[in-house]
Length: 241
Length: 241
Image (cartoon, rainbow over all chains, first blue to last red; front, side, top):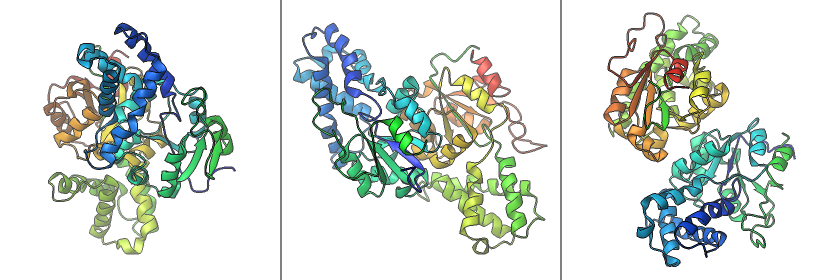
């Protein structure tokens, strides 16, 4: 494999594929919980609980029950719910501390080889996130981590959350290219299935540590994706870079 | 002046402020016109005529007579009209040649000091275009010219053309900041007036060659803008960079 003929742009799932959300959120949750008298809680379990509310929050928008609402707002609502699940009162915590912890999602670290791999891939392809994260979140993350995106795309630009087909199709349209000239890179088989159904090319990248030790989902490519790579450096290599 | 207190992001007008649209369009119009038997036409006058249809095209969208339509489409319609004004038949020219010339707007060169100035400014500020150009146009331009944007913003993201207040206000909202934390950098007093009315900070940069020799508009700062700079290097200097 020395490249997909015709592919002009690579768009990336971000949470789990480019950055390690679990360790990043846990790193900031730990001192937050300690400051608010709940040093007994496991910060990784806290991160998992927060993330567990991610799909249901977006589903309200995907179903049309709620207008499109950016992820920072959903994350904040979900944070308050997780605090309440643990017997903590968001009002006591206070706005400033809630806002600051909510922005932990803006400060996630990339997987170790991600920036180097993206930098290689950018020599040949247009690169952008195609994430459910909102523009400010993805921009702040990129600025902090040095992610070399050519543009910040995703759900907020498309006004549709993955795996809604419009999230993929409108991203191609905004880039001025056909769906088959666009490739989604993701560590999640479900995201790639939706992208393929919309006509995109697909690249699976293995991230076996996304959910910590003992991860049971997305431990292998479940369908014959156009490329299957160990990481972004391997992806760059397989694409002839 | 060593910076605006509180300003977090600089957003830039692009056509005329960052890039020289007149010379760039003329450079590509010249061989196009020669190939189609109209080497007698002045390519700079052709560029001016094309640009003259820019505001009326957007006004259809601003007024609500037409849904928001991205600039690549308006540029293409305006190109066909300019050809017809010169007695040329777009159908004879053909789709491929029309598309290629239309993308001259994706291949404009920056003013000589623009990339170096932006690179300095980016050390302290979030940088993005706030242009009426669409995302693909601005992305392709940035990739070719090396413009170091943190994100591609503007009319297509805001779904509103400047000087509609929503173009400025939605850009601040997408960045997750207040309007007064956002500064518009532009070579056009009218753009800055609309930005100031929406609550943004303002920086005027002089581009006396935008319209060629004998330029009569925007030859000076007409209002007391927060910063008035000779070029982007001077802007970086005045902002303490």
